Amino acid sequence: MRRCRVFPVLVLVAMVVAACATTALTTTALSLSAVGDTFLSSGKMLDAAYTAKTLSEANYQKWRDFVPKFQVAYAEAVKTVNTLKAVGEEPTAAQQTALALTLKNQLIEVLTAIYLPAAQAAQ
Image 1 (cartoon, rainbow, N blue to C red):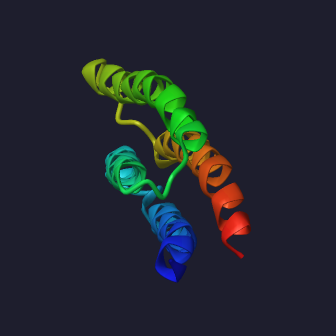
Image 2: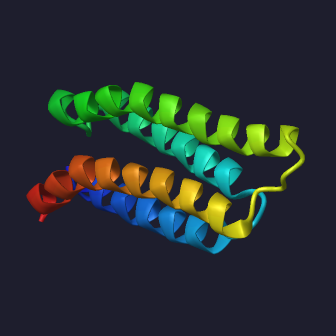
């Protein structure tokens, strides 16, 4: 039983580490890709936690509500970068950083809303 109570805390730590790792990548050309990869890996972890019944229905619903919003925002960010490239302008590091940070912050916000209550309950 102890293991099930510790799982949310461990996953929260993994999410924070992944989010921090993304910070280092936000000034590279791969920044949007890195945030997208973090989104996908977060989804896999949340799906596994929900399937294992270590994540409540209410908290998983927060993820379900967030997914389509993130997908639209991510697609728009990629479209922005591709549009700039199509007209012969290379997106600046500042532009790419702004796009990636916005998405990353949205992801961190929802993950915190999901895992913080679970981590606090486990203590």
